[in-house]
Length: 192
Image (cartoon, rainbow, N blue to C red):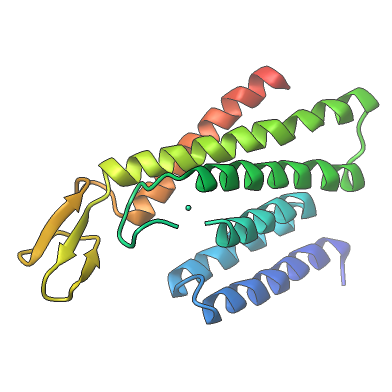
């Protein structure tokens, strides 16, 4: 088997195992597991460093999630912000550590990459705040008197709790990821 085929096959296998486990544990629904499989496979196939960062993000975001009253979109807690900073730091550290083992660069460039750790911590906090702000303002939350639970869509039996009906949870996640990526890219341009 060619070397060029080994990494994509390993990527697909690892991604399949993780997506299947996340689906069975109900961390992801079917569409999330399928999307996660595709995204993980691409990242790992492009480089183990990128795959490692994505996996660390997935596991830390699953374990370090901001506990608030059920149905609260945009909830912010001190513990949640600290968790976002910690998760960002761990992701940055993963980038640096895997970089030492998988890439070659001059000593000064390697030391400069250590700036990724605090930048990642800041990106984690900013991403969390952007997600919370969008969730609180643009994502609808309401209480359905028939189903007796908090729902994400308006209806005749739904009393609005907060937000507008502009974005659903997936939309909030997409926009917050895009904005965080854009802001982090701008910061990296000036640092590196």
